Image 1 (cartoon, rainbow, N blue to C red):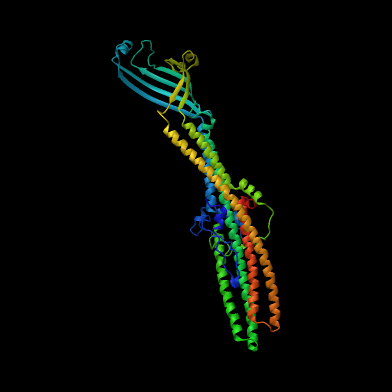
Image 2 (cartoon, rainbow, N blue to C red):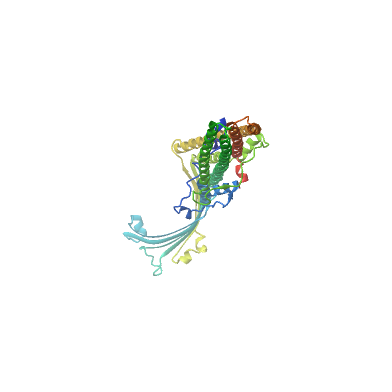
Length: 525
């Protein structure tokens, strides 16, 4: 399993080399996975509830909020969480009392045995027609016992006529009974009967953690896209500044050339530099558009919807080393990372499944008991009276045993599979713990490295500015040429751009560290 840090870091662009030997660490992120397809003009957005992008300047917090609300992966995980929550109600329904009712109409004809004819007045054929009504309530208890209370009313008539029977009447029997079946081995105990309910609760918690983990990834990608676009805009500004500088020097060079104080080759070099800067501006504008479209994809905002250009309100984050230690950050990560908590819940879930599998491998031994009373009368109202039934009790108690001949092959296979799944869950938990420790260490190292590069580039920028001022004074005194001045101005702009790139890289490193610690969403909820 790839870590979140590896996942986010792997999506960055490779570092690009800038003019005059400048280098930088790029923090661009390729958004192809979780962003989902952008909205189109097909009308689909008319039936999908999407959060609109606020007009005007877009803050980083607003961008994250819109992405979390609209992102397909986040919404899908939240739907899975809600679906998993329905499993709790479904599992709890096993303990819901059930009302049972039935009506049966029957008619039978059969030959009598010799002994039956002695009782049935030499009737060769015995006929019986009946209508049976039954109502009852049954339920499963936490101990695994199945309880049922039932009232049966039977109205029947036979061709064995009693001369004392009132004309037009039938026999009516009422039976009121209570029965219980209590498992003593398989299916016995609260841990078994509530296993499905507990698993459903854990599945819901796992789905909640998975949704939060996906939100962290979506938020991280959106923040990085925001930083990338902010840097892309600064790159356009830097390219425009180079063009203005070259245009100013070109005007001076032409004036000096007309006065015969400058060689034509130097003027041509300035013209070539201007063309090169204009080409760089075109490239910078395309990169800006590309990065804006990545952010738009995160926001589910298609080109042509909303403002023509996204205007960002927040600048790149400042570079600073915050307090904190590796051990402290690791402890925070193990306590807050949603994917780690998800793994722990999976281990707990597999433990419940293993205990259930072991129980199901036991033989079935059930204690069965029932008690009932019954009444018989030509009138149903008389047959169903308690006074008519209480003197005719019926009861039974005993054991029912069902044991496979030899070892339970099904039970053994299920227990073995459950053990392997739990071992795999434990291994996954340990692997993720190792991965988290390495994620935190890598993020710490990356942030420190970027901060060090930031300090070095500050020194470079200071020296480049000083050298530019010296070169301008030499040019004014006629001891330098336009090429040197142009080169020094370009180096100053490149150093400024490198500082901005380090700001972006620091913001990226800080996002990765917060994601590795599991605290990234705290500032955006």
